[in-house]
Image (tube, rainbow, N blue to C red; front, side):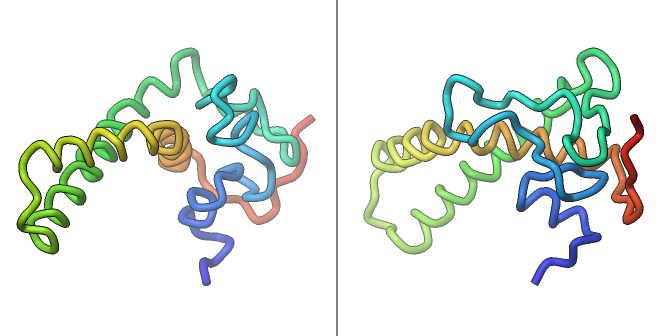
Length: 128
C-alpha cells in the first residue's frame, strides 16, 4: 500500500503533512458549511498550517490544474468509449462532475499545496 513516509499518504488521507496523523481539514470535505476550511494547527504535532497570511492562495493554481485534468479525463473518456455522445452531453457531464467534485478538488488542492512546502518528520514532537 502507500508508505506512511510518502507525501502521497498525507494527500490521500488528507492528514497533517508533517506527522501524517493529525486532521488537516476542520470538517468532512462535503460539509458545505466548512468547505475547504483548514485547521489552524495540527492537533498532534501542533504544526501551524498557514505559514504566512494568504499561504493557501497558491493552491488556486493546483485547483485549476485539477479542474483541467478532470475536464480532459471526461472529454477523452467520452471520445474513447462513448463516441456517439454529442457535444452537449459532454458539456453536461463535465458540468455535473465539476459541481459534484468541486469541494473535494478544493480540499485536495490545499493538501497538495501544503505538502509541497512541508516535509514529513518521523519524530514530529509537539512544539508547544
